[in-house]
Amino acid sequence: MSNLTIELIWELGNHKLAYGKYLTDHKIKINDKITINGGSAPEYGGNQNNLNPEQALAAAVSSCQMMTFLALAAKLKWPVLNYYDKAIAFLGKNSKEKMYVNKIELNPIIKFEKNFSVSDLEMDQMKQRSHRYCFIANSLSEEVKIIIN
Image (cartoon, rainbow, N blue to C red; front, side):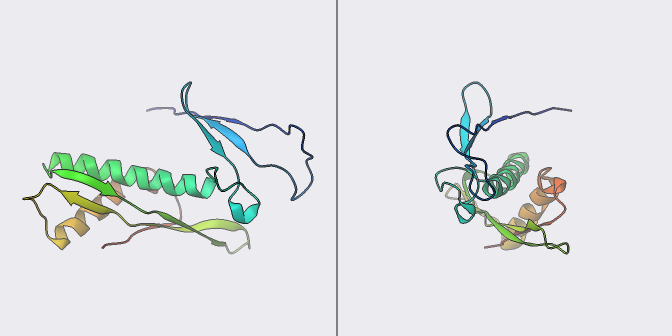
């Protein structure tokens, strides 16, 4: 099995660390060449130009779903040309009144080569199968819902 790592770097800088008034901007180093600017969601005082954890979670689920779909499609020789998704992470409060991501909705739209098509039933089954094999979705205890278009 693999161990996959990131490095997270936050510094106080010239700011003050006071409740509700501190800077959440940070760097997420993927490797020596890729660093992402992270922070809290704009609704919680973050910079809209930074990736927030809720978006990162939705992106991880969406990305895993897509890669699983493509692996299964390749196995079945489905000629996929394009895969688009608009993933949505929903926030709510759990039974302990703690904020959490209570649902992630995936809205995949798949396009094939011109002369290829599958039935709606086949596509629905493939999306659900991809979801069952997506190990990011399998790591979550909350709902990940695939919207069938």
